[in-house]
Length: 227
View 1 (spheres, rainbow, N blue to C red):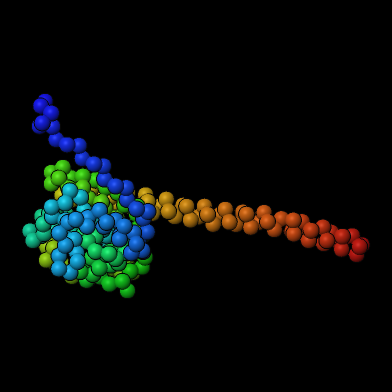
View 2 (cartoon, helix red, strand yellow):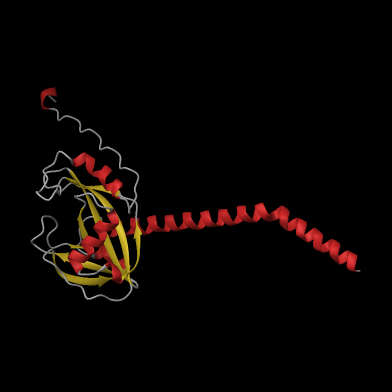
């Protein structure tokens, strides 16, 4: 091949900053790599010409079913595909705030209806068909009760599906895999917390062992003296 026609090697993408779902500083550090892109008048970043884009994907759960949404022909990508609540991370606010914002805008569901939230570690995947790498921030939202879903222009239909049914849907790339990654990440976080609590308890018991031994010996002496 003529060296003149060899495509230059792409510089590797910078590593993601340490993930903190509730801190603005994480998103601020993440968006530094996109400062050269066009910004709208309100300060949001336009990712239409970018090779990558950070997004939040919110899996909405009630009991054992997940909310899936059919994308309309008015969105820029994946028209007619099933997805869940999702949106660009295009300004400085926390991932948690983005999740709540997109949830309300696309479904009408408010924070007061949420029983709990879980955050998975960000992951990247490239869709070669549209030449875009998505830096995905998966979020799990569990609801207190079945909501009345109010769709906006981005979606035309809704469906509550079992987790095992996601793979069979004509969905956006990595839809079911993203949910699996999210659940694995949340389970790992839970295990880490439980292990930490167990370690603290064991250490606490160990630190009290000499005191407990002394008390036991004192009670034994008192019992012998009473005989």
